[in-house]
Length: 297
Image (cartoon, rainbow, N blue to C red; front, side, top):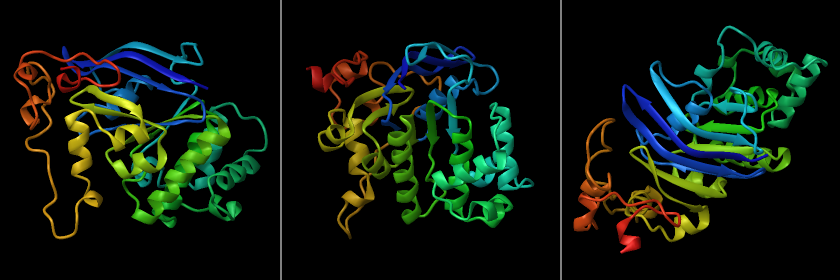
């Protein structure tokens, strides 16, 4: 399966929130989209699922295996807070069975639900089916959410900050699970995150977003080892694991611009320590995996 997004634009009240967003995720691959809060990562994914806020619209081209999908068909999403995503008054089994029924599964619902739990690493499936979400740990709840997503038999799995509510040890487990599912099921996995460590551990390719636009894209290993855009480099420098103990943690000066805020030229130039004169007046085109005058100068 292959997901291709070309020229996605999301707008609200005439204000562009995401512009010229493009993405390709091949079967069995994990593609991470990373950036600060407010960069447009989640909005881009919600557009594909027709789950944008009221009044927001989107344009662009979306294809799965070369075909235009019908609505949300072929897509499933895992949210960042499993306790909110799951219904607190329904058992795990009831929620899995309901999802299977909605998506047309006509076999043994109970047996299939146990199989799905086993696929995401939850043993003793029969016992888990009778539990309510509050009786499970955070990691177990997130596995249930992933199982519910798989019950829809998706071709594209969107994971929106799936490890935010988990501790460090469980984060690695869930990321490894997503990678395994991508490989075994030939899923196209779109991982949304602000955590560069998650990007490093789980993704094959990465797109870096800033203020509604992709500013750098490429194989994860190359982008993280040799960032070409100053924003990517600044994100990496502000990673706590990259700062020696006792030293002040580097931070990016300023804030992500607000939606509708008019900034001429490159939208990152007010915060960029390497900005050229033309950066404040001319917007660089996205070419060869990066949008930056420093690269094309």
